[in-house]
Image (cartoon, rainbow, N blue to C red; front, side, top):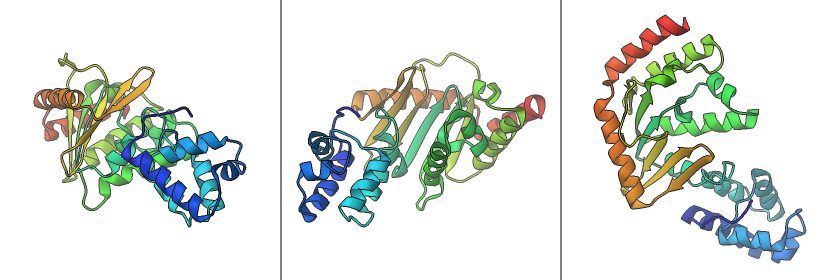
Length: 258
């Protein structure tokens, strides 16, 4: 993977790797010799400007006798995700408030295994998607506000049975105290261009992830986050209320997916 801008999480991961390298009394060259990678790449990992794969994180942990600390830091970093998304999962996992608008598909936090299996390649990716959903039931649990475009309910992913179970799952989770799920009827909503998620921490700092045709973008830029917050408020204001949304999903199940 190429260079990326360092974040607090990537710097922490690099510091943990470097700490164990020093304890093991190994130079970067000696450590790199254990891999098919260069000493300069090890240096970029330590500086937080490059990401390593999960397999390499495991190998680092083993070589440096880190007792699982490097693997744990890698999981917190979210290094198994595409570069444009890597910084978001850790922020989502620790968020006090998650606001998500889904334009085309059910957001990953709310997908059933069957639905996710139609979208992802391989058991590892599916397992990671389901592991990500643990944030919904952690203690304390975050407040999650999900607005789904009406088209998501009608856009077939897999067979009719997969869609029926997915919508039934949405109805079920929407009854949880920490989840507010609303359906946005077919309409033009000013400022809406794609799906996006805003993860807000207990200190009120927020990170925004926006989907794009070629991948996505993660940012903490105040102006961009503020604009997304305004768009989400507009969506919530015009969307069906939670109870009406459940009734609408039930109607779609009966008329389309039964």
